[in-house]
Length: 189
Image (cartoon, rainbow, N blue to C red; front, side, top):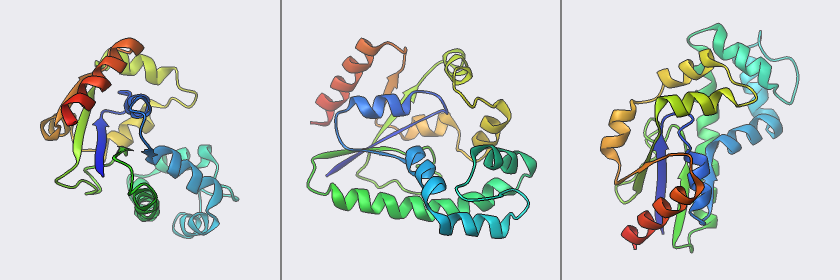
């Protein structure tokens, strides 16, 4: 199995491109959202270490955002609980798809959590800052302060770009995106 990992800036289009590959996708953002909705044990752990922020299960997004924005260390405390659960889900995903030729990993903190392997194909999704800001502002829960907090725990896009085997320039055009994906697949094969 070949693991294709998509990396890039917040809002660069990683999830969009991940789905265009046509292979099984591990989307860490969706997994985290599922954990917040369904994992009562996780909720209880979060409530124990951050009792002033969470009222009742399931965890509410607004409470989570307020918690992250309230204190520099809160995000770190949350990630220390969430990331082991995400890693466990990733392991299950890999085992479930072990007979597949390719899988796509859409994990925002891929390098930061040391999830990369030497054999991984790294695809950097590059977007202009202007396009990213426009796309992010259209999101339902857009919050620039929150985005800045998450950027603080990520390695720079320059480093991600250096580690990449491929760079796709996202022009937010569907036909071009498909062409870029096909070029990457041809190169891999």
